[in-house]
Amino acid sequence: MTDNAAHAMFEVDEASRALGITLAQAADGHAVASMRVTATMVNGHDIAHGGYVFLLADTAFACACNSHGPVTVAAGAEISFVAAGKLGDVLIATATERTRYGRNGIYDVTVHRETPDGAEIVAEFRGRSRIIGPQKDQQ
Image (tube, rainbow, N blue to C red; front, top):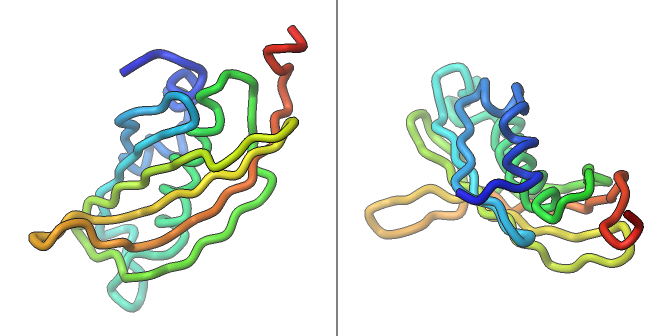
């Protein structure tokens, strides 16, 4: 695991870490994070609460957009739920940078779970980022 601003940020991210989210990688606008769905994350329909799925995707997004160095925050995001997460599932969020322009960026995150038949997509997330810290060319 390469040390960069994203890893440093994640190390003090109490919200994500308290839910058992782990960061497998974060570099060059890409990140992979995972989380096991626990009993406290299941809603009244006996499926993973969408807020937890969003939080996992948002964490991967944050790590991807902060992997470049300047402090970057979400300017907005949306999610489409494709399949229900279930108790015990290990959800994997893979964030990919689509573009950066000025202080802005667009990132896509796919949340999936592994099944005997391969990866099954649970959600698709698109995040818009905004750099609020000094950019490298301004330092």
